[in-house]
Structures are given as C-alpha cells and as structure tokens.
Amino acid sequence: MVVEMSVFNRDEFEKFRDFFYRKTGIWFDDKKFDFVERRIEERMSAVAYDSFRSYFAFLRMDFKGGEMEQLTNLLTVNETYFYREEYQFKCLVNSVLDEVARRKKPGEAIRIWSVPCSTGEEPYSIALYLLEHWPAINDRDVAIMASDIDTVVLSKAKRGIYGVRSLQNLPESVREHYFSARPGRDEWEISNDIKEAIEFSQVNLNDLQSHKQMRNFDVIFCRNVLIYFDEVSRRKVAEGLFDAMNPGGFILLGHSESMSRISPLFRVRKFPDAMIYQKPLTL
Image (cartoon, rainbow, N blue to C red; front, side):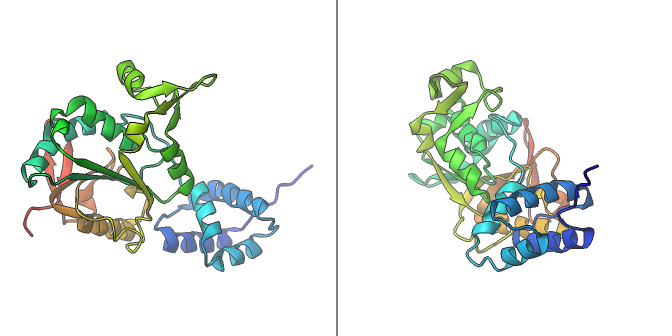
C-alpha cells in the first residue's frame, strides 16, 4: 500500500498562509489546504526542493521576487470570458460614459482601468462594447489600462488569442469583425487595432506602491477579486482605488460584491442597467 505524504502540516500551512497574505493580501481559509498544497508541491518540484521547510526558507529569501511571482501565478485563479456580466457593459455605454463625458474638457481623454484583467477578456470587452454600442466613441479619446498581479495571464492577454469558451457570449458579427481564425486551431486572435488600444501592466492591488502611478481614472472595473481578500485588505484596496479615481468616477464590482459593506467612501448609484458605486464629486 502506498501512503501519500503531505507536503506540509497544518502549522506550516498557517505560517505560509500568513506570509502569502502579507505579500498579496489574499487569504486562504482552511478549505484551501489541498489546493495550496498541490500548487506548492508543483513549485517545489520545479525548483528541486524536497522539503517544504527548505522551500519556504528559499521563498522568504527570494529578494528579487522571481519565485514569489511564479507561485503567485499558480495560486491566483483566472477564469473569465468576453462580455461576462454584460449588464455592466450596458450600464457603461447607456449611462456612465455620457455622464463622465459631460465633465471632460475638450480633448481630455476618458480613462478606464480593468483590474485584475486576467487573460484580457475584460479590457478587450470594454473596447469592443464601446466600439459597438457607444456612438460618442467617434468623438472622444478613451484610454483603457489593464493590470494584473499574474505575469503569465498578462502575457496571454497581450497575445490576444482565445478559444471557444472565452468567445461563447460574443455575437458572431463581433467575432467576425474583430477576430481572425487561426488556421488549424479552434482559436481566434483579436485584431491588432484592439490590442494596441489596451495598455497592460503588472499591479498588486494590496501593495499601494505597486499602483501609485495608476491615477486619474473615470471608470474602474474591479470585479470578483475583493472576495479573495479579508476585511482589512478589502478596506485597504478600496481606499487605494478611491485615490486612483477622479472625483465623480465610477467603480464596478462583481455581482456578489458590495462596496457598501467595505468602505463608506463611495456612494451607490442606481442606473437602469446596474447598481454601481461612485466617488463623490466633492468631499
């Protein structure tokens, strides 16, 4: 009979959990023990460590951050697709952008930030939805930034190549207009014009130094990530996002997230298509 040995025990798991939380703000509850163990075992094998204790020491002494980056890439879940939670894109083009545009001076760009952007479906969806459904796009400059902590998914986002699952909600007309089929593969590549419209960068939301250069946004999409933080980190991230926004700017969260339970800084705005949150025009 073969007995499988655990990579680490509960005490070691808790020490790692605390360390990872301090670095990223992401908290793994006890139910994630097996998930974390499998991912750490994978990295231990990749860098030739046969004990968690020696690997953990290596990780803590990794001042350049290369191994921490690799492990973070494995431990962050990235599942998304085009036009996910489409009602929020409808709200963007039907209500939000016109209100933002009225406050802009001639020639001043509207700035939109997608964070975390994962493999790029969200920021590309924003660009596509504006092109397809916001007539004012022909008269307005719009800058779209996209960020994630995971360098692997950022690389995939920049390539802009997607399979059937990612494209499942896209109208066929949009796919045919903005994508090209890859010969011999069940994949499509988004057009270079759309790729060039997005500026990608690595950002750790829990590290204010990491995104202090991200400022003056009119709209922020920060969907389905705050649920992975504990209460203290959620409040810290919310304050960082607040600082990154222009007065009167809007932030869109995932359908199961509520800014009202996180921070009193934002006010609720109810539009026909969605309820979202706004930074007050005056403080």
